[in-house]
Structures are given as C-alpha cells and as structure tokens.
Amino acid sequence: MRLFEIAALAALAVAAPAHAADLATIDCVIGKLKPALQAQISKDVTRNMGEGAAVRPTYDPAVGSGISVAAKECANANKWSEAALDAARVYTLAKLGLPIAETFVSAQGFEIGELESQFDGLPEDLRNRPLTTADMQKLVIASVTDEAKQTRANAALLNKYFLFLSTVRYAAWQFSEA
Image (cartoon, rainbow, N blue to C red):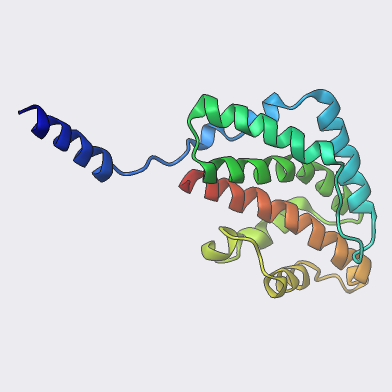
C-alpha cells in the first residue's frame, strides 16, 4: 500500500504543470538594489544614450554583479526558476534604463506615447522576443514621419530607446512564462 502512495505522489509531481513566475514579483530585484548601484546604472545608461550608434553600450562591472546578487535573493524568496531569474535580471536593467532613454528621445521632439503605440502595433510574436536588426530598422523608420527628424543620430537614438522598451516587454513576458 505504501508503495502505491509513493508512486502516486511521484506521478503527480511529474504530471503537475510548472507554475509560471508571478509577474507581480519581477520588480523585487529593483527593490533590492542599493542606491549607489542604481546611481551607477543611471550614470552608465546616460553615457550610453549620449554616445553614437557605433559605440556599443557598456556598464560598470558592479552593475551586472549587483543585479545578479539581487536577482538571486528574489529568486530564492519567490521560488523562481532559473529562466525567471535570467529574465528578471535582463528586465531590471532595461526597466531602470527606459526612463532615461525616454528623456533623451523626448529632448529630440519625439512623443513617448506615439513611440509606444508604434511598438505596440507590432505583432505579438515580435513583441515577445528580442527584435532582429531588420525588425528594429523597420520600427525606427515607421516612427520617424517628420522628414526633418530623419537623421542618423535620431535613428541611433530611437534604436537605443526601442531596445530598452522591447527588452522590458519581452523580458516581462519571458518571466511570466518561466
């Protein structure tokens, strides 16, 4: 009889569907970051947004390690899977960088609401994964209807902005599916 109970419990454990991470907990990581680390992220994102298109964004090594430590604490507290932990790390940097990117594109005369609408107009399968270079290029071109704003500098700036927005959205989706 005892053997059947153990076999039944084992079968239930295997047959039970995995539970996705609770999206309400994803901002846990941001809440665990020390103010000095948040300031470093802000400094790095600001510098990256101001640099030209040919310059790959860089971050102080403390940024990656600090986000990883905070994400692991949240993963342990909330019982996240490894996939959820990874998505939360990616989400955190993008979520903190997005308001800075918005400031930069607003300063060039772009309306954040219109840019978000352009992004939201993409098919769901595109919004739920990293955008390809071709997808990003089409999105940037579609977002700049004013001929006076059709410059390489603006294209590079919008590319960086959409990278943050896209990352926030797809990382949140990946987290909720993990």
